[in-house]
Image 1 (tube, protein in one colour):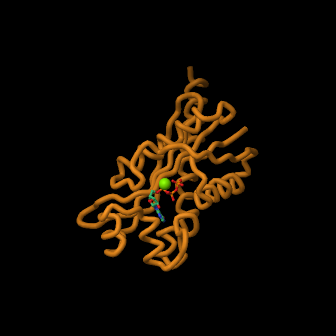
Image 2: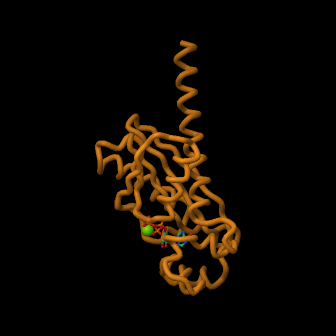
Image 3: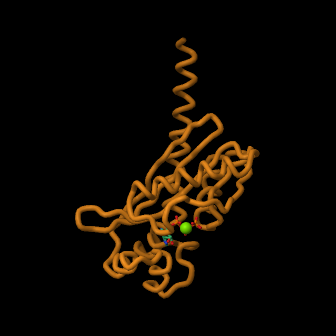
Length: 181
Ligand SMILES: O=P(O)(O)OP(=O)(O)OP(=O)(O)OC[C@H]1O[C@@H](n2cnc3c(O)ncnc32)[C@H](O)[C@@H]1O
Ligand SMILES: [Mg+2]
């Protein structure tokens, strides 16, 4: 069985590796450079979730060998005067199932908000803010802002645990429905 992931970003792929290891799932993980179909810096929950769903569907289209596809997308979302870091994941399978789940959210500090409001990508602004290179592929903005307590990979792992749990739950529901017929 092959799990296809709609990214080449190591922080996101690491989250999938950690899920597979912790759940003891016997699969191969493949990363695909697929389009998210949204802007490079999504500015709402709706757009961010759409990006995650688009990536998952695009992976199923890209490789017929993939049985389950995952898309992960990061973005920002306005909430009561704050700009929150927001992240979404999507899981799609060949039976037309499409599940989504969101991750932890924290307000972005003013310098980061100013950067993305000026139309820049958060990853670039975060590099400058933290004086680091390629924050997006390593601990992520959430890692910087939490002093390493929660990395981008750990945040996405949580989303993947939600998705995998939801997927198992759907499966159980289907079996129960069949048994009660
Ligand atoms: O290669 P892909 O999978 O596209 O990975 P990415 O790092 O570009 O991540 P996203 O497209 O999901 O994120 C959309 C934008 O938000 C930025 N971003 C989101 N979350 C971030 C985080 O925790 N740390 C750094 N940048 C982040 C990212 O750099 C992009 O500009
Ligand atoms: Mg991107």
